[in-house]
Structures are given as structure tokens and as C-alpha cells.
Image (cartoon, rainbow, N blue to C red):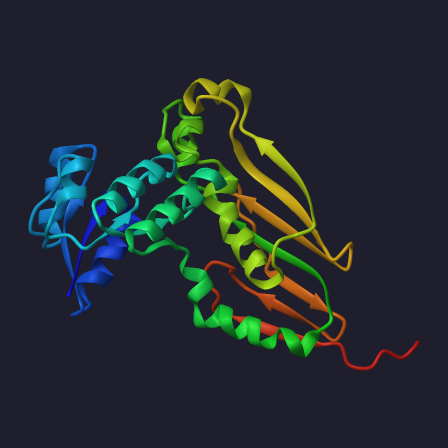
Length: 279
């Protein structure tokens, strides 16, 4: 039986706990929240045994084997290191950390402590995504791809109304690329590897919002990646202030794969090129 605690009281943390409670190989112990009363109520409503009032208390808890970290992005690094130091496995919500250096430090600490540290990037483990990977040989050689995910965030309304939110806050590492763009970056790296060249463009929120966002923060953006000295080009599009209604696609010389929703694929289609005859 794996005894699991959580950090954070977000909707996605609630989704995670539902899965834990439905699994006879795991048990939900309780939640750590920056608001102790909220954490206690959240724990009780989901059948937990007890809530936690500090990171040190959670890290030292003998009745916890693993911790799911669903807190704001900028807090992942410190919280993961503390839990690892306490001998806990950690599953960290995407993005794993705010920087590459932080991520590498967390992975090294987990290896040294003999525990597991992994990112909660579910789409990469989706059977539909694996079906796409399995079909790539049918359209090869691949020449171009467009991976897209844009979803208007309800929290953007808070910013427009003049209210601060963790979801648009430079201090919390919560711009569009970090929150939404990872859904395009990670599949690209999984399929094609690390690119040989990158060009990135971002659209920033209006300068009048910077007192709320603690600096310039990206609302949407595009990335153009190249592979093999120009052999393959990949376009990434991400947004949390608009809705992107276009499908993602991977183009090969023998056909094209279309994916309806990159984060939760439900409909994947292959159009084969066939023979091309002039006229």
C-alpha cells in the first residue's frame, strides 16, 4: 500500500486524489496547504486521515510514502527537495521545476536518496499518443509538424478585472509557456528529440497589468524548432489568453497525421498521400 499526501488544493489535485481513492494499492493520507483551515477541510472532504500545517511536518511524516506536488510552479523545487530529503517519492505537477538547473538538482537528489521523482505529464503516457508514435513510420520521412494547444484561462478574467492570481504571476513561473506550452514542448522532444535550433516569439500581457503579474508575462507564443540542419521543422503554438481551434498535425512525405487535442487525444486521423499525377 502506497500512502500518498498532496500539496495544494487545486482542481487537478482533487482529480489526482479521486484516482488514488479508487485504487486499492494506494491511500490518501492528507493535504498540505498554505491555508491551514482550507487544507483541513480539503483533507476531510476527500477521506484523508489528517492535514499538514508545514512542509517540514509533511517531509518528516512517517505515515507518508510519496507526495504529489500540485502547488504553484515556482514552489515545486523547494517542496520536492524537502520531501526527498524526508525519504519521500515525489510526483511533481508539470512543469517539473521553473528552470533546468532546478530540475537537474531535484533528479540528482532523488537518485542519491533512492526515491522516485517524476513529472505528472500524463499525455505522454496516453495510449492515443503511443498510437500516434506507432503510426509515424507509415508517413515517413517526416518533414514538418505543428503542435498546438491554446485554451483561454478563466483566471485571465481576474487579471482583466484588476485582481492578482497565481496563474498569471512572474513570481510563480506561471506564464503561457510554462503552463500550456509544456503540452507542446514535451511531445516534440519525445518524438523528435532535442532540436538543433530554436526561435521563440511571445505575446506579453498589456503593460498595465504588470503590477498584478509582477513583471512582463507571456499570454501566448510560438516556437519554431529545427532538426538535422533543416531536415525537419516543428512549429509549436501555445496560449492561455485565446482558444486555438486548429488540430495538431505531423506531416510526412507519405501522409499526414492529425490530432484533435494534443493534451487529450480522442480523434487521430491519417491522410495518405497516394500517387500524385500532374493535372
